[in-house]
Length: 331
Image (cartoon, rainbow, N blue to C red; front, side, top):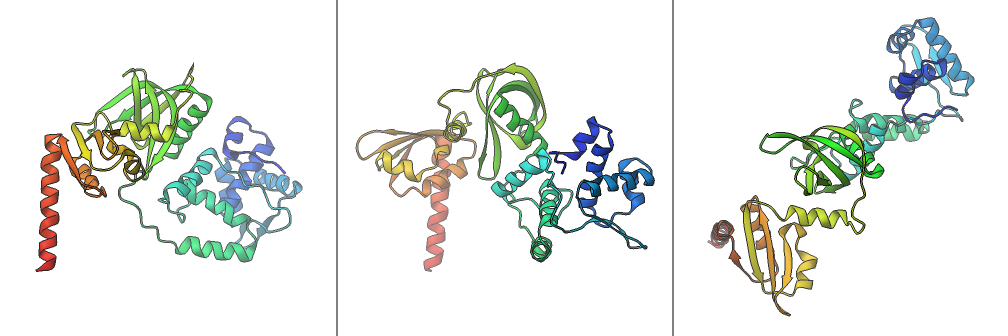
């Protein structure tokens, strides 16, 4: 049997009958019952040529069935020699992304995950496929509004650049809407709370940076190679990076030992420094004092905000709301 990661890529670089036959197979798999004229139109060839490509597939042992009549067409039959699954890079990464974020629609054939899942279902034995298809069509995903899904092709390019250690030029749009372009060394792609980040070294800023991949507008892979830090811990580095450089400073003294707080506080809150055996200083910053104050309220120990006037005022309001809610509940 023939096996390409992407039949369309093969056709783009090869106009041989074999390459056309592979694309014909992918089209028949994706649209069971496709008619000869529609298949010919998709391939950009005559119906006679289409029948020749179907013959090539049958000679290779792939069971292509044809049904005559107004509701007939080509479909892949189920037999002992099923065709290979031909996932594109985008579909393969889409499946990984779906496992990590769970926010793709498995019923949408235009979505990379929906397309890849359809190929899996078509390769299953008939009884199993029927059950899987029923679940697929009946599923009603509830999207996480806080999550941000990046473009799979952009993500694929960045993951490959990280793996190949090749510098890239990014086109980026910030949360405020400003756009810029610059060169970075892509160290790692990290998923955190439904958001995808590129951890990198920015040559423009001459500093470590973490960029939201859903805000990357374009990627160009360059010829320059790089070497990431030998002791790089991508997750820890990202958490530390997200805790510094924000608009509002935070300094908190907590009445608990540092080893206890390390296990229960998100690293994104900042850096923990032991003051003595029973108290710890938390130093960080935030762009959202409300979120930060709410995180502090969950600390299982008493604490004092000693730095950051905006955070102190926000914490006072949060505390007052909690007191009001408690009083209303007891009245």
